[in-house]
Amino acid sequence: MVVFADAEQNKRLDFLRKREEEELAQMLSQKYGVEYIDLSLVAVSADALRIIPEVMAREAEMAVFGQVGKRISVAVRSPENPKVKMEIQRLTEAGYSPVLFMASGESLKRAYDRYAELSYATETKAGVFNLSNEELEKLLTEVTSLADVGNLIQEAVKSTKHTYRITRILEVILAGAMATGASDIHFEPEETQVRLRYRLDGVLIDVLALDNETYRLLLSRLKLLSGLKLNIIADAQDGRFSIKIKGEEIEIRSSVLPGNYSETMVMRILNPSAISVPLEELGIEPKLLARIEREVAKPNGMILTTGPTGSGKTTTLYAFLRKVNSPQTKIITIEDPVEYHLNGIVQTQVDKKNYSFAAGLRSALRQDPDIIMVGEIRDGEVAEVAINAALTGHLVFSTLHTNDAAGSFPRLIDLGISEKVLSSAVSVAMAQRLLRKLCVKCKQVRQATPDEQKIIDTYLNGILDKSLIPQNHSTISVANEQGCEVCHNRGYKGRIGVFEAIFMDGPVEEILRSKPSEREVAMAARAQAIPTMQEDGILKVLRGVTSLEELGRVVDLNTGI
Image 1 (cartoon, rainbow, N blue to C red):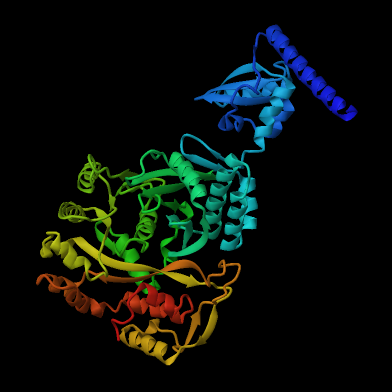
Image 2 (image 1 turned 180 degrees about the horizontal axis):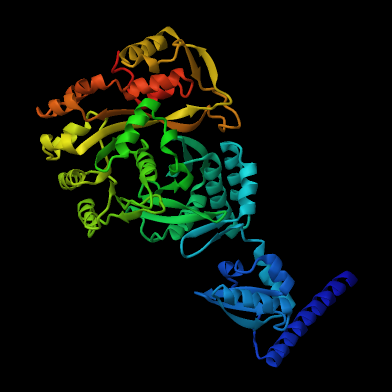
């Protein structure tokens, strides 16, 4: 009975002390002419709370609890505190309009308790996801494999703090993708779970399975961040947001599609470092590179790159643009969409209603450019304007969707371009694919099997320039199945291109007059002694850059047998 009485008495004393503290705060508010606030009776905004770091907030005995645009509500223990005055000045200089409220110390503690729920990641209505340097560096040290990403997500899933849980999961997913070099993040709902996968070096890899409820909350957060409509679930939607890491913004493109069980979402990571590959490091064989550089240096003509989606065409075009970019040249691009930003270049984005490729190209020509990059030649109208631009003193870079370099010419003829004009306009047509590179640390070397040797010899016999062939034809490198920490246990790290090209010369010009097939164009260009993509790939296999298995995954190795 005595213990119970003591507990009741302590509870009563605590209540009286808190009430006295609140009454004192109300009295002081009248003295200083500042409105009184009890933070236990209002909702403290998480986004507002983040405006002042926790350490500074506690030292100055203040907290931001509300925000409408740049107008912020700030609770303070004492308006005359020098640290409060300094922080208010800093906020004002940062463009905020602070409104002060008088609060008790006990009241401020309720705001400080909310800091514990905040992750290191922050979100804004502008669609920017700020990841602090300290947290990123911490996560990068913790993430050495995809299993680590899965474990960290599982820890966050089990967290009891609801607000923190979803933000932390998103934080780990994004940081894990950055740490492993993923180009895409895929959420694929199934009946009982949702698969999370990363695309690493062009191949999808399972990370873990999320429960449906967690994914539902995560999807809502990502939709909000990407500027998508939360109430639309039966239509496709596209959006974007940015990650800020060490002052650099990395754009994330979000795509949502309706599915059988839930909406499926893919986030594409547009990392500027992934696109900033110099022309010399794309994987183009040195002799071919020297010829391409001569064409790129010319004042006019058309240079085409071809290949399927994800074959690295944009990276190659941007490498060309960086090569020719100088203060003396005017460069305009028409892209769909503008994925990466280049300094010193005018980049424009097509709009389905008002600014098509054809309209954009015509408008760009009125601005007296020296060099034009057209993201893709999709129809006869764009092809005609681009060809005419190449004929009238402009250097034009563009892409086509064909399987190989030889297919570019019949494709343009099908689009209505005169075969007589092609020979004057097109300088070179290239084709490319992307291969995963073997991990330098853990790759293994062995003798080729008889079947492998047969494939190798078949393509080596087709290479006219024998100086390109390495001396040892029977030793090849293969991926280590266990991998290592460098390649995240995959055996492959990074990617490199395989290329082929056809330059405009007499035999090619002659054959174009007869509206040739792809095979006829390839035969006419054979004398140029440029290896095909298959032959270029075999040379990279013999040099230990990639494996024969990887080459066979990307290009058809049966065509030469």
